[in-house]
Length: 173
Ligand code: K1U
Ligand code: ZN
Image (spheres, rainbow, N blue to C red):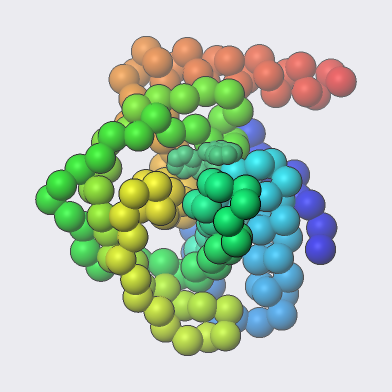
């Protein structure tokens, strides 16, 4: 298992509509292991493949926040939203590719998602609460969309400038 570097916005790989995963194989299972380890290490509650530079449709998440509770790692390959609730929920989101920046995003409060599991089987589940927010944030990553795209242009531009500065500093270090 290897921790992979997380791309920081702006990066063209974070704006790309990712390609479907053609088949579940050992290379993909290794990527899923690496992504889960990278997510827990960050720490975060989700991570999408493009955030580690792989522009394929796969995401991992674990929204169990209580450190005494059993972890619930999930790996979703080629996820598709099949239903969204009328009811919405607003959550102050963050992103591992946009460190230390937050903004309110309103999304459907519940979603049904169908995906392929790492054993090749098809799964479908309904998500609510933080799980629903997180799975939508991660599927947005697979479509080249970031949470800042839901914010007003001024706040988005301010955050992007901060990230450009952060990246210049990281490149000098
Ligand atoms: O995709 C990502 O960048 C991960 C992101 C997921 C996310 C956060 C908030 C709302 C929707 C989706 C994160 O995990 S940011 C870090 C975070 O939220 C967190 C970190 C430690 C403990 C609890 C939460
Ligand atoms: Zn994110």
